[in-house]
Image 1 (cartoon, rainbow, N blue to C red):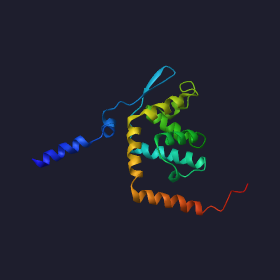
Image 2 (cartoon, rainbow, N blue to C red):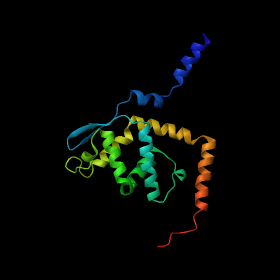
Image 3 (cartoon, rainbow, N blue to C red):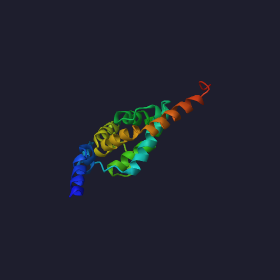
Image 4 (tube, helix red, strand yellow):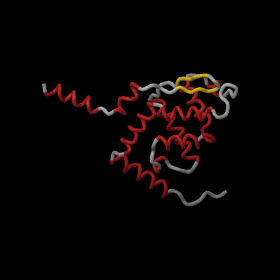
Length: 165
């Protein structure tokens, strides 16, 4: 009998943020009058997104470990990563919208400014929101926090000054 009550309490402890990705709707993006329903985000998308974010951070001379990784930071790094990771970003966008890579590169179908609509939808995506909540929890683990701090500090020691041109 006690076991059933414990399970019931565990179920009650599940936060709304943990349930939301399973019951939430994925966003729809309208571009050139055509609607594209974004697919669910998965683990493979995590790696794609972090590759792009890492490229964006490197492009502006920042280390990921030195940044507070929030959805806003990730989106900002995605945006500043455009010049450095255009192919990766376009491939991710095509995948999210369920279209071929060639289609997303067609300016007749996806004119300049389409990327803004896609990014706005990605920011609102229930899976992305849930992921960043979990990422923030992970970043609070003391051992991981200390490791990231050491990694950030050790890489700064390796720098001898500005790069000469």
